[in-house]
Length: 487
Ligand SMILES: *Cc1c(COP(=O)(O)O)cnc(C)c1O
Image (tube, protein in one colour):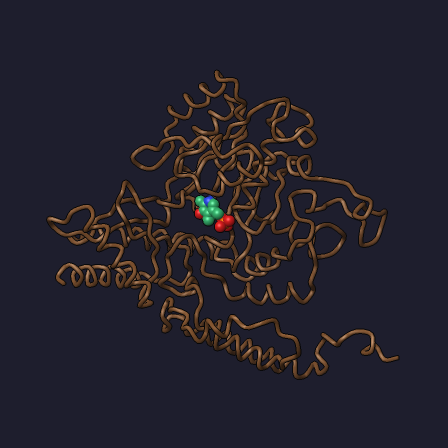
């Protein structure tokens, strides 16, 4: 009996044909990225393309060349936009090209990184060592790569609950161990993923205490101290304090060293959300701003934001070496280790987080860091900060623009203004300006609302942007605003 009578051949019947398609894909991909600047930042997905992406489950085979052709015409022309030099929306990174090769190779060796002796596990271990060094994290700390900071918050807050719940067996007893009601603190500008994590851990979203911020959107530490006292007096159990190294709205950095001191005084776990901002740690100019961050109990940062990795890859670091294992390790006969061979291991990432099967996301980081070196990334990050300072200066010097929030990092929020405008008119026109920029594919900032003002928000996690792109943005905002107001 031939093997093909037992299984359908899912490997290519002709590897030469497989190679030929691969060469074509690599050629097209390089041309696409090399010419990205000449494309619109974004364009709507036409109805016929949407229809082609809504067809039924394929029952039979299609030549892979045809499937690729379909990808080339339906998916490739209509991306989100973050690979373009004039994309500055939300907090999306631009994607370093060499990392795409690594992602391809990760699928070829197809390792799952739960545990075991294999080189992929060692690559993630090595990447974690490098990231600890880059973040000035203690060498005996621990960590894990995750899909994103949202996942990282859950892992870090679970470790916080394990360490600070006041019971030895929080894992067995559950969220309301011995009737304790836990509380978590962070500024009102904290990313919603923290509240989500608090909800998921069974603490209850209302017990994430959103502390007011000052005029620079930094947590009001006096209000924080009062909130912790009030909760203790009410018999609640304060667990964790979350500091922001770069808020998503405005790029504000909380006074992390002061928060660290409060956390130590109050016996709270100190967690820092440095989703994008933590990377400023690579710059000597920003160490003072981030003082206290590397002494936190846990830190999350997204490599797919300000380290320009393709989605998805993020990192959680913890200070205490066993903080993750004591929270997540579990035993089961079918995953226990052996004395030697592929199941002999001292390191199991499945014991440091939630997932058992895990993709080999470490490889793209390993590949990109080796290829470019950390200094190149630091230079890009410094460049992004300089570009935002340049944009801020342009907006400050224009009588048609008002800077609504500024930061020491990579975010500025501004709006188009004109004399005699009402608050409603300003919001309406700025919304329209942003829509024109986006829909016409000119540039892609996003928006937020600050003190009731609709603002154009520029968050620069883009290694492809040039200074002239920001000159262009300012020209366009003013031109579109003038046109809308004159009409
Ligand atoms: C993006 C972001 C998050 C969420 O991270 P994901 O990787 O999207 O899950 C959390 N906090 C801040 C400050 C962010 O910018």
